[in-house]
Amino acid sequence: MWKTPVVVFTSLSLLLSLSCAGDVKSRSCSDVRQAFTTKGFSLHNVPHQEIQGEHLRVCSQGYTCCTSDMEDRLGQQSKLDFEKLVDKSSHTIRTVFTSRHKKFDEFFLELLDNSEKSLNDMFVRTYGKLYTHNSEMFEDLFSELKRYYTGGNVNLEEVLNDFWSRLLERMFQLLNSHYTFTDDYLECISKYTDQLKPFGDVPRKLKAQVTKAFIAARSFVQGLMVGREVANRVAKVNISPGCSKALTKMLFCPYCGGMPGLRPCANYCQNVMRGCLANQADLDPEWNLFIDAMLLVADRLAGPFNIEAVMDPIDVKISEAIMTMQDNSIQVSTKVFQGCGHPKPAGMGRSARGISDVFNSRFRPYSPEERPTTAAGTSMDRLVIDIKEKLRESKRFWSSLPDSICAEDTVTDPDEEQCWNSHTNGRYFPEVVKDGLTNQLNNPEVEVDITRPDTFIRQQIMTLRVMTNKLRNAYNGKDVYFQDSSDEESGSGSGSGFTTEPEVIHTEPPMVEADKSGPQPTAGAGHGQEPSLRLLVCVLALTALVLCWR
Image (cartoon, rainbow, N blue to C red):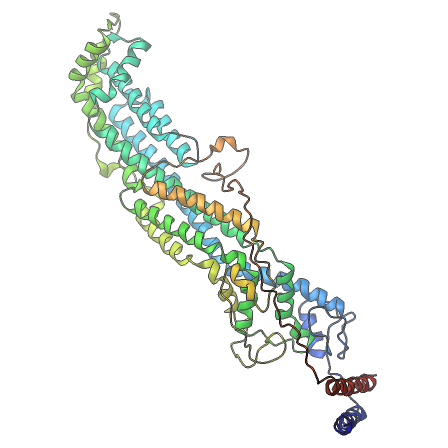
């Protein structure tokens, strides 16, 4: 009954003796030393020949070219390299939002400045001192429009209503300069603005156009700012211990194995990146909804809510309203006198007729051809087309980020048979897991706690959700209320008062129970003696092998 084990043991002993008889030499680590130098590391304590690797915690514990200190340094380097890869892959999308926000903001503010300058030049030539003596109401109008766009707590309808009321008061006094009007009387006049319609239909149409255009423009520029800030924040990755270990194994364990030039297999890289960027991928659904909402508002800006089409001719429209008031001055004055009472005549020293004559004689339409060109030689249409193209390209960015990183030639090896598969040089067989946190439960490369979503990423999701709702409101012409920039102590650029940090809502993360069941030991009767003999043979063989290594 002992015949078979004795034969096996004798054969093993013979093989081990032959192996030990040869002078087994470890491989050179010269390539690793050179690669270490290229990385900028000191060669102090870097072995010249392979050594026993039982001290390693991440890489294989067989013969190795790495000391514990080397493995730690390579672990730190893997984090830095990963951060650089994410930064490089996200550079384009971050630059797009930064540059387009700056370009749109500059365009809009220049458009406002040009519109105000155009109106001022036109009214000075057309109305002379009658305008310059009353120009503050026009300056106030543009100042409030600009404050609204830059994030101020401004009600556009109230601003426009106030402008037309003030214009009515001033013009009524000029057209009836032979009367004296008290403040109470002027207040009474303003109450008749809607009933009298002294400026025709211009105020109603202009209010609808300006309100919708400014709501769309402000929400759009704020959306570009939110996209920029979210992209910048999310690109600064939080590296978990499980991710750090997987990165070290993927990027630098080939060094320890004496193969510093061996790059990871593409599928292996994708599993590691999907595990490390699982939370970023969960941003994608809300990011895509945000981009869709931005595209909707962009369509409005290039169509019915085109701010350029509203602001370019605003001087002509206001001038038309003034001329309408002049044409209807007798009917308007009669109705006001009927409703507010007859005012007191002015003193004899006041040349009432002279002012009225000058006022009437200087009224003339303004030729649009005389107006200056607008905003940096570009147009809203061209600007929006450019931004829309870039926005479309940014959809599904976060879920495709692992693929983008692993597609880099400097990261992975295109040869599926000659690449690092996490253990050696050869094909990588495990399947690539899907993106997102919950799909990392079965990730073979990265240990991910799917019950703990990244709180910071969840905050960015909430930020996008809030902005998306505001963009949808703007698309429908509804006002979007932002925090007043005057409440902020610091900030630069348009809309600096807008806060992109929503109130953090704490929710319990979903609990997912991992399958902890495993194969249960089974008892076998009548087979105790044979396994015991086999075990004895194995123990003796291992003992001989250890003695050989010594």
